[in-house]
Length: 204
Image 1 (cartoon, rainbow, N blue to C red):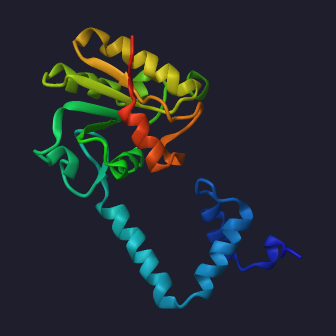
Image 2: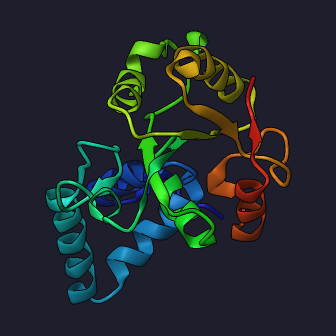
């Protein structure tokens, strides 16, 4: 029988509430995680706290592409071996390592920070679209790859980007076969993602 929350110590209830606020963590999972953390040895728990604090202190967004990094610019933007003529546009920073693991792309990246969604109050100016346009206008970019989710909001964002960048003389492509409808990169395996990158199709 599940314990009522009032039977738990206040500090444990606060920990459960904090964990429950994480994406994909429901009340029962939050309680199991909290109980595991407080019942493990103190040194392991303190090490977890230190590592979390260290990550929060050191991690920042790359001023050029928007990726999570500890240095400016990030290692990808700073790598002279990367193809400077290609920019892969993604929704979230977490999408970049997913594409990197597929080992089929050697260009640069640009993180939008979300998708256009009027119903959620997310307009184009709320995303890093102006920064992307500026990077393209500086010259040297011949292809922009849209690696966005294949849902309604992702399609709307891709359409807006196609209109915004269409007159700047760059080739616009989008991930091709292998990506199921409604899919997000975060939930796509490396093989499928690699095939989608290799089979990208030109927009317009």
